[in-house]
Image (cartoon, rainbow, N blue to C red; front, side):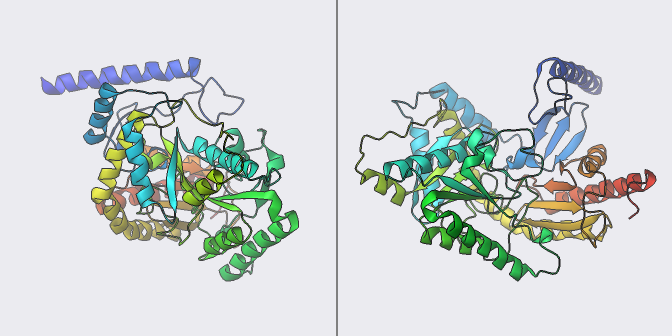
Length: 472
């Protein structure tokens, strides 16, 4: 009787899933759509999550390879987070941040400041990563206006970067195709080379590549003038750009140039913060830098509630308070700034991270990286790179040229489709597959994940050979 009831429930759930798919095609606008299908598409429906697993609309259980969107750090279905969300909503579901405040946001700001490097001790809460970066940039503009430097507003960014989807944050993006059809504040942005060692000029050593990047940065500052440059914004690891890790010491050298030229260094830790690299913040603990601001989101609540923020240097606050414009207003805020439910969830999430999840992530990270590195045995794989519990498998046409463009540009989607059938969700990025599972993943689950990914890539190689797209 129990089995009959379970099957009936499954059939009901599948029917509901089919209804949801059709409803989405009629009414739901998906993010990052193409014009040819905008407002008329449905994507893979996810019904449930549990630990490192999700269940799709057909009832198929999958390893959540991307952890949602780099964010479900403590795993799905954590009762502790669901309960605190309910408790806080029943106590106080919302308050206006314009002229009131709530206790969870004050406590969370203090705890985050306690983990931040250097003198970063003040926190402004936002709704996510894009609004966090937008806030940091608007704060830089306000800071320079108050200090009587209205011309010091240009922003340095890099090729391969991804910083968000709001107007200023999206203007910083340097990934292929992100800006092909979209406008941006181009007059404010100065783009530098991608720090990707895998794509460095042929014959150049990694050390020489680092020197090239640093020289380019210094020369750009000299050419434009430090008096016109307000900030440099950089991810410690370029996540959506393909888990790009710059040469060792590069970030510290860039930080020093910024310090010497009074350029604010904004470390975009929307992905790397809250455990992805084994620490609450990676800027200092992993890369040895103390920025002027750190942006965060995603893992701060493990994706259970939309929340982000900016941690700001006490020095910047003090300089504003000492200015000759005490009445100058930072005209920036969001309806959901310092949301009490989001902050309460983040506090409990931080308890879980500090209570063992961070330590576990540091312990399994070397195994995760080593197992994925074995995929370089496959002819289609040009490089596997990563840090902590984030990695990228980059596919190439051949290992001589490392050219991804001679093969199917949707090779990542092909691999994802095969992996989906085999029980793994990956994040495809043109010719790359990005993996960033929940931090609670075990070594046995890592074995399962890598075995499925290996088989998915192998099946894709067979497809490409059969279609004559790639000879291997």
